[in-house]
Image 1 (cartoon, rainbow, N blue to C red):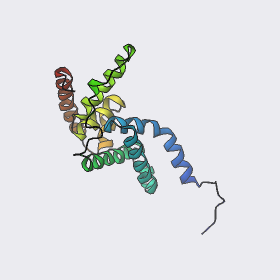
Image 2 (cartoon, rainbow, N blue to C red):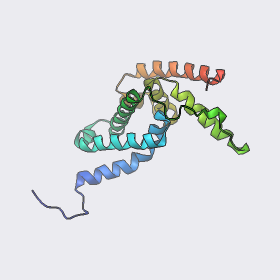
Image 3 (cartoon, helix red, strand yellow):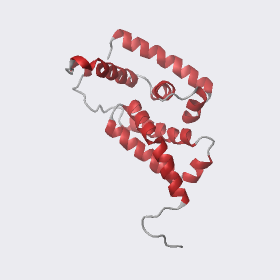
Length: 172
């Protein structure tokens, strides 16, 4: 086995680093929108990237490496949701009770949207986040979720109906 000097990276490591630099911000945003917690989002992204690195050759050979890693992220988010299903991060905090400055309509709207997203099933939430907040096409979303485009369409439709209902009722 050849010894590499400290601080140098082989081609695969360099490719992985370049890939991560290109996708990291988007993965963090997706993870946050899936779980609603920046700290958990960081953990989810770290887990997803660690798994992607350990299977880097397979990721590189995928038709769409970004979709492959997003799918890992979504699976990690589902695992986390299942583990913490009965645990709420802040059970006594109601976002509607938090005082905001006059210029904070955008913050209130964002908080309402995040709460509304949390009312969706994990699959519906992932579909909405990938389609509308990350701007992926139906095909790209299907690849990231490992399902058909028809499933993306039906999940999106159901999710939008529920979001509209939740936001119009003010259940958040």
